[in-house]
Length: 242
Image (tube, rainbow, N blue to C red):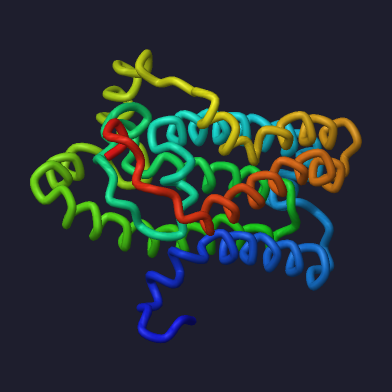
């Protein structure tokens, strides 16, 4: 840790490393240290649920991809991938009418899908990721409240943090026509996209490893660009983003 930098700022700056570390820890516990090879869904619903778990996970990854891409379109990749908090405009258009943190929600949705296809310790993935994201959200929202002292409290009182409510879902659906995915949102938020066909392949073969092989290139590409854009000292974005 860099001297003089509070832990939460360090955690935010290196969030990609921490997130990938959580994935690695869950995989080691599930596939190296754990003996029972049955998936979490098999353990909870019965032995016939292994292949359906891959189909369910594919659907969750597709949902996470659309939500992440639409949220990334609003925020732009230079802001999402920045290693530092950026003084930006307050995003309140869809999908930010569903929850205040749709990109974090998309990651948690995907992690739940993956955990269903893994042995029992795979549950560590969404649990630890949720704890990590809770800390990040607290940090980000304190900064947003400082930057938007009037508008952010009003927004926070209407839209939930991470779990959609009936009210926020209705509000989102009524304005969903405003949701869009542009080139930037698609290009830099496609980390789960290849897992959709990969998981469908796993539903056929019965092997989660096949989904990993298909999906890993997209994750690697996202991690590369997250690092490049995070390290790059980009100028403040133009007026429509601040």
